[in-house]
Length: 174
Image (cartoon, rainbow, N blue to C red):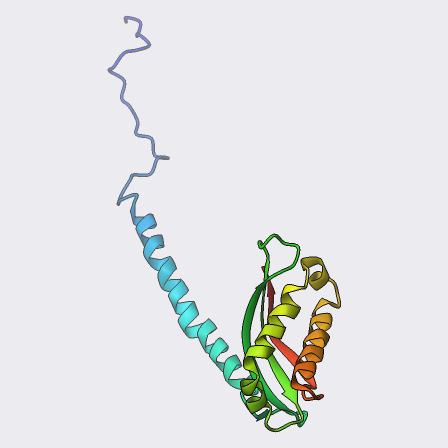
């Protein structure tokens, strides 16, 4: 019998049983993820997160109105002064302060008083705010210094101790 060559093709080849047969498209898992993930996110938002947010907002206490002649819980009357934007001192006009505040007084006609003297009070507000520096406002008592200066200037312009308190609703340094 002749010797067999190592590379003889006559031997039978056994199939490899460990390699699984490929079936389906390799894009199928990607398509499933692209469709299922947004659907899952939508479902969680719509049926879990939004109902919780709505219920928490509904149970929160409504904000007290602020407008001319509004009476606060402390028995004082308030008037909204509106927003004021100024450049801060020493910032080379690169930093600014935006404030909104409510003026409180024992006078029930505070809204009318503010309206009658709006131009002079707004000018005093701009003068006080624009004289502040970034460093002065960033310290622990910066806002209180501004509050006291505004109350003092307002009462000086009005000729009497009309303004009792100022409540900031916005105080943003940029």
